[in-house]
Image (cartoon, rainbow, N blue to C red; front, side, top):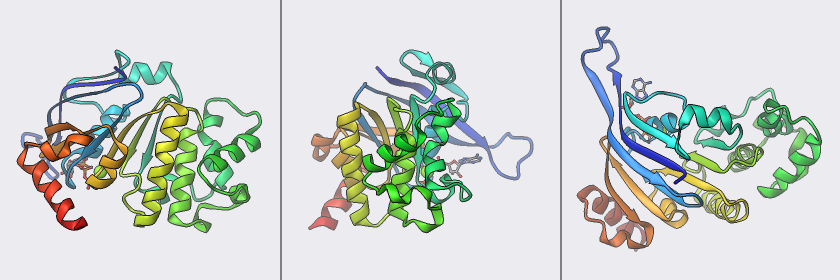
Length: 252
Ligand SMILES: Nc1ncnc2c1ncn2[C@@H]1O[C@H](COP(=O)(O)OP(=O)(O)OP(=O)(O)O)[C@@H](O)[C@H]1O
Ligand SMILES: [Mg+2]
């Protein structure tokens, strides 16, 4: 098992309350696992706790209780010993890329951070090619690119260190539908060619179902349904069914 999340609870103090007695219980007993080479989708409405869960998995925040392990090790320990092996792509690609950096610097940043300073030019060229972008963009600045191009740059950066595990938190949500389809295709190719494992977070069920092997439905801090994506029609949970029905009526 690559990722194992066991009975995770996370709460925040409600804003304005200094005593911290009244808590906002964001995650309430989350358990699931992701096998090596699989793509697991996490779907849920805004505020259901998706990004909170991804921050815990990335070691950016700590759970109140429960455990998160990667290859059997606690997240922080694993990250320390496996630098560059896990990466993340966020929804907000505009703030993900330093505006003062050229595209080349944006993409090479994680490599440089790992002390890999050799052949940067060639590596960046290869990565741009990998995500379907022209090498001529290398010396441009983020504001000179379109949203879809910049999100590809963020993906190129995320794969620069050859990670084995990628967390994509609403990585395509703010793009046009046609660009979304292209990026999904790219993610599918990368998964196949680089043998990657994904946790794909989104609120678009169709995108999740098209990329992922399994779909987890997060509702009010709990996973209410966990189902293989080719068996979605048999979802039993009411919230999962509601989402499924809305997609079906949409596509008719
Ligand atoms: N640092 C924080 N302090 C206090 N409350 C927080 C914090 N981070 C998140 N929350 C609250 O936790 C809840 C879940 O937020 P989260 O960002 O995980 O939701 P989400 O499912 O990612 O939503 P979206 O689809 O809009 O991205 C929200 O009510 C949010 O206000
Ligand atoms: Mg979020």
